[in-house]
Amino acid sequence: MVSVPTITTAEGERPAFLVTRPDSLRTPLVFCSPHSGRHYPLSFVEGSRLSTDLIRRSEDLFVDELYRFVGEIGAPMIAASFPRAFLDVNREPYELDPQMFTGDLPEHANTRSARVAGGLGVIPRIVAENTEIYRERLTAAEGLARIETYHLSFHEALEGLIAETKRVHGMAILVDCHSMPSTVRPAQGGRRPDVIIGDRYGTSAAAGLVTLLTSAFSRQGYGVARNKPYAGGYITERYGRPAIAEHALQVELCRGLYADERSFTKSEGFDRLAADLRAVFVSLAEGVRQYYSRAIAAE
Image (cartoon, rainbow, N blue to C red; front, side):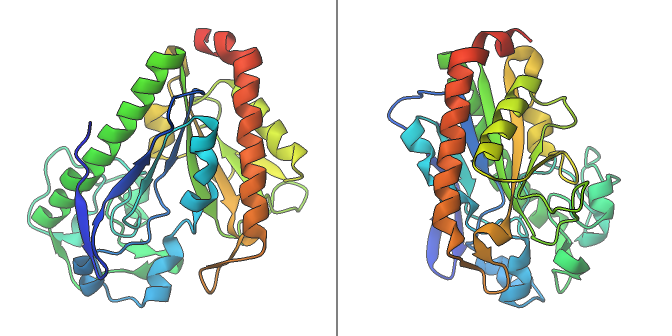
């Protein structure tokens, strides 16, 4: 069992992430919500130059709550409590921008990735619309402490859920749960997608799984796109290993379906989307059980 670190917020101490487990693992699905955290560490707030409304623009609003049903279908879930603006667990652990820090970063730090160049490394420099987060540079020691305390323990817990699920079912299917702004560019044909399924362009999951999931969303009336502009990040890349029966799919939901993006509140569509998501993943779990378990595990 992984020891869960805490964060100190204005409301007091909170666990850095939450793991919810069903009574028994009745499906090979594992759910992860890395960006829905909305509990801001005090030290982070004090060091930020941004208002609350600006800093919250990077949240995957209420995604953890949309997926509260997962225990009912026999699947576990891990969700970060801290916000992605503080630490992004969907990045490599040492994907760091040297311009953000005083002091030396370790030699193994990845300082040249495209995400670092864009200000969106493991400790982001900006939030939406290229807005700088910090008043001043952080110390390298502070940045490394964040990674070693929160990033590494989060992934240790996620790895454990995947390994346990695979022991039970002979395979594991990670669903990486995200949301996207309603301003995402339209898909081919001019319609903005309601859902984007990312499988790293066919490398992180068996094709049959993508077909099952796309069909399940389409039956609920949602417009579905694949990989563009969201193919999956570090989590999908790291845990999507179909050759050894470990699959990963990223699911992006349009925030306009269920929330007011300006006021950071739920809209009337929230309950409907939550119910539809439950139906989608019940369908996926049943499809895997009936038709795909052996074939996917052998790919």
